[in-house]
Length: 409
Image 1 (cartoon, rainbow, N blue to C red):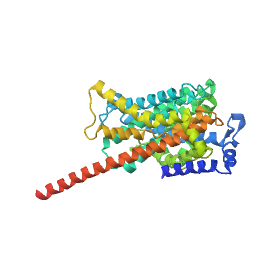
Image 2: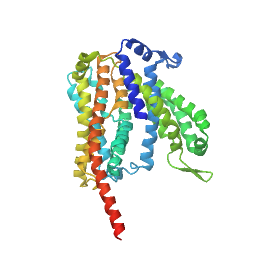
Image 3: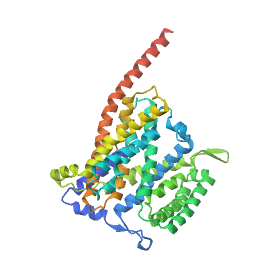
Image 4: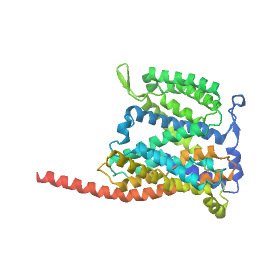
């Protein structure tokens, strides 16, 4: 359902911006609202990218912390080759480095567009996992674990890139002040997990204002404000603590409350304001697809992502002497790697940070991200569906033989 809302929002934006009333869309996107003395007089498009997407990255922060504290990344030595006997951490690094190099190579002669090198490095975990769930329901659990771990590490790398490379100037005082509400948020969450878990109003009335203040101060500090969402996610306890003798996992409760807001409102609204691009008809589309920015992003996501993932996986298995999990083959890993080419949400965010919204390169980047994400989803989905039928037949044969054995016994 969340994926459908996202696609619908993107389609509405594209249709609107290529209709006779396109100017009304851009007027809406550029409408400024907010309190100017606090430097919060932002356009609706900026509020969507800086504010609403922080909700999405708050959930990403929760997922990252869960993986590091209680999941497959708890032991990095173990996480390098988890149950899947693969190397998702190294694969994620390869899936970030190679697309960036491909984009840089294509745009080497264009200094004004070279700054978009990070656009094809991101994977949209929600879309990738959704496609896998739809067309790969009978795949072994090992490749699923590989994709999940890879996507989590990919998210961490993308967030790090945004924080380091897309921060022009850091104002120290607001950044230090942001630590105060962040620390209080974390202290209360750890001290009273049961209170906030079982009293919904308390989380909204107490934790939410602290989160908003943290976000505003991080924004004032000059760091992209979505990073505040990740920090707040890290501040939530993810292990089941004991309060009044009852086990409580606050992170799970907050995730269940926030995820509908993120998937049903925040991300679709961001997609609506981020994907609106006036293509200019068929001629404009063909021109955009031939631009270095577009080629760099499409080739980076469709080709660079899977090649980086597979080559890094192969190299690490060679160096460590380990083999893939026997429950699946390299061809399954190739299909999973193709899913990582679905950039969408985070790639669109980085595209907005890389180029001036009024520049042609910004529109070309959006066209490229949308095109590459659709191609990756269709290509990976088709190949996974074929492989899924193979595993379904294999599972059916095993079930039939098991029934015969029980009957014979």
